[in-house]
Amino acid sequence: LSSSSSGLHIGSARTALFNWLFARRHGGTFILRIEDTDRVRSTKEFLESIMEDMKWLGLDWDEGPEKGGDSGPYYQMERLNYYDEYARKLVDKGIAYDCYCMPEELEERRKKAISEGKKPGYDGRCRSLTTEELGRFKKDGRPSALRFKVTPGQTQVNDLIRGNVIFNHEEIDDFVIMKSGGIPVYNFAAVVDDYMMKITHIIRGEEHLSNTPRQIMMYGALGLPLPQFAHIPIILNEDRSKLSKRRGASNLGDFRDKGYLPSALLNFLALLGWSPGGDREIMTVDEIIKEYSLEGVTAHPAVFDEKKLEWMNSQYVKMFGKEKLAEFSLPFFLKAGYAKEQLGRNNGKWFEDLCELHMERIRTIPQFAEESAYFFHNDLTYDEGPVKKYLKHEYVPEVFEELARRLEALVDFTIEKIEETVRKLAEERGLAAAKIIHPVRVVLTGKQVSPGLFQVMNLLGKEQVIKRLKKGIIFLRGA
Image 1 (cartoon, helix red, strand yellow):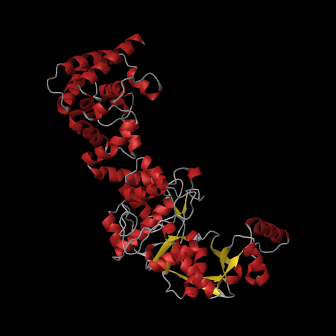
Image 2: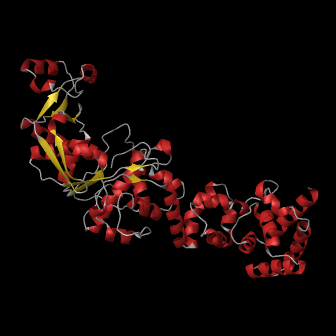
Image 3: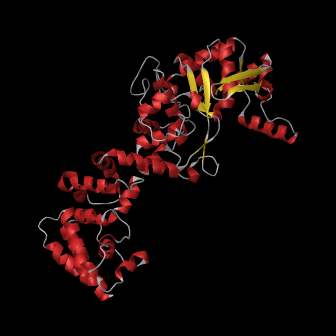
């Protein structure tokens, strides 16, 4: 995986998932390799965050950092001696050569080519430097990169998803494989590492398809066996634009912070560009592994529909169980500023019951925390918007007063006793139960919609329910 200053991109997470599923499906070895040659972006903190993201999603690796294995080291900056060794082989074969062109010179020649209507690629200037020129550059201490010499012809990529793709070499310039300072570029380092780590299948995003002919050339030049390639579709926003941070969440950490369950996100990502056939959508990890195949991967772009992800997340919430949901939700409620003492009431059983009460309604955990705020805050308002209509009837203050008196007299403040009390009062007053339930819901929650009122009252507790009813009486009689 390539490191990024903003964590593991959702596209990279999907690519890692497809590789992981393929390895698990076929009993292979899933190796985590860190491509950290970009020293500006590859800080220790960001590299660790990438691994934490993968662990959170459930992508365990068989070999790699923290695990070890026979194919290490697993950080590319610890493998520089290998890249140097294979680079020297290409030089000795006359397939790679030193390029002393400076960045500003390359840019100047690129602009000139464009102005003359020519292809703005590398012109091969250092391919045939004289002995005198080479000597002068070395004497001056001029830095050099190492370029691969592209010969005329074609390269065919036998892609497991896209079929055969032909690349004409006239469209490919002599490309850099080692930067000055001995740091390899991605294409070269990947070839060396994939060979040495005995990688059989390379599954990556379609944006890498143009890299593949260059890599195939290097495999051929070094006499190395060719792995199989599969390029999975890119991910687009619903408006068909490229998935990016500017358009919303684009990194795995963003979705974790938004309260998505890892199991739901894994299921969702697995179906971005792959289908098991039929109309199945909710699948366990084991089911996905059993069904996964590259034959089911489409070549068409995958559209990221966050509404569908929300729906899928809600299905997983329902399957979670109140204990597990409470454990997962607790950090989000603490972050929202809710009192730890209240969340821990009755050894945490109160919070578990709160989770169970909302389970059918939860899309994401922050949304759950927001919608249940009235359990934690007493400063409710119910004199604005649509809720006001439920309190306008003349009978409401008197009903609140009588209900408070009857609830106060209850010895067992159970859901059954609360419901019995409310319905009996409605019957005695000649009112439909809803004529009491709606106003009571508003004064207790500040909302016109909530989970079942009697369950809400039970969780709020007798003291708080009576206090809010009396507050509502004061408000209405003072209005």
